[in-house]
Length: 478
Image (tube, rainbow, N blue to C red; front, side, top):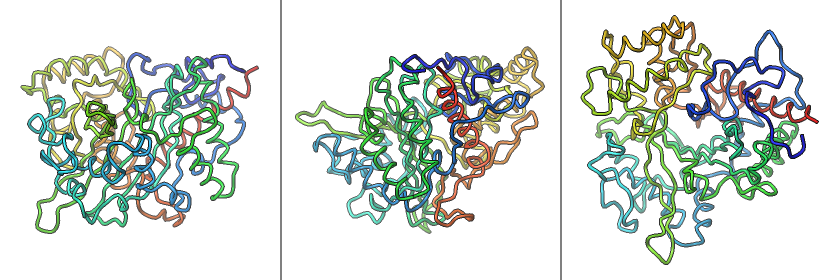
């Protein structure tokens, strides 16, 4: 193939001989769910069979790395120190940057040495016009001398999301570090997920410019030495492949013209035995550089909407929110994509004006419980979804469609839909008790951290096929 643009009009999870499997995918313009876009998610046609691959991928070496001996090099201090250093020594230190992230969960004015930063009480405890509650249990990490601090966080997983590279190859996908508070306890869990988007140094080549990244991850499968793999991954994340920027960089978590990349949190710190319990809460942040306060720019985490997480109240047919009517009209246009009867392929687009500021993955009947908000019906909204299902020839029900939308939300994927039916004979795969990358030992290998059944049995096998198919397509081209 050389330097010709790699033709990926329909390379989803299949080699060139399997293109018929792409029928029914959402169009590129629909901006699919973040975990379902880019290079694609379609399974091969069993009638065609799998094409031979250049080098079979070992999932636990090349897609989901949870070996403790490797992850020891990827602790919270290493990540935050790299980001602070990228800022040229100005602004916040690594400790301050960590504390500033969690100070967003406190009311203004927050910590004295972190002036002018975002807080939960900004705009009357709202973001994007939707509720944004304060979380003092997590916010306590911003205090000087807090028992839970930057050194309390260790990496529990590195994740290769080459499958999220966009069709035009304008970037090379996402590469993630999951940090968990250790030691952990049932009422004392907390996670930060750094999701860097890696720029393509040769975007004029399309996805072909990213082939060294795919080859790098594939090569880990053939390396039997954990310490050798650790050194390679350390270099990839903190130094960069030849010609590529390092994954961990201040401009890869939102501080770029496209706002690409993000940091997400999965929060469940409790305030103590006498404090009222708080639900699991998922939030999203962008790391941005504030250069208004010269002479130095200051990196800071800014709360952002949680993508593909429409505010649950918008599903309520009786909602008085001024955006409910337009959301429900838009949602009907997404029914066909949600009706695709494949766990790896159903999807939908959510314009950011409808995205919530947070996602509660626990409270039954709460505002983020889409099924409770949707209600039993009938209503004009129920009827409109039913009519669209009939138009596309689907036997699913309106409740199935809303259940699938909920499954694609953070809270739904992490807990609400765990192990529950989503219509069409499909069951959403199980999480590992509110998380997919855990801080617990893998029962089959105590030298690794455990991952969820959903990752192990459903999503990672597909990502394996995506990567193998991409490598095979390149190797078989002239």
